[in-house]
Length: 119
Image (cartoon, rainbow, N blue to C red; front, side, top):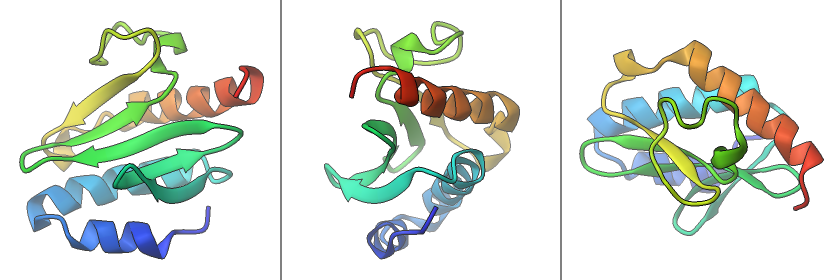
């Protein structure tokens, strides 16, 4: 994945404590899904394949890794927030709280799902 300078700028605007979390999530997404395109949409980083797959959102106290079609992921009901038809997210308040294995599996499944479902 080619890193977007716009996402670099977005990261630079974050409070350093939140930036560490956002950067760790960005690195995880890049490692798990090198084929996605990184850009800024809706004032946040979005990762797209055939359609929008993932996003990173930040507040003053946590970073959210969101899945546009998260409701279709296996195990989405366990460990993800959101009760809509499709969108789900995980909040991370500390880089040490990143469950890398679980998040990597969800990212990879989301990419695979994007290749099968209508855009």
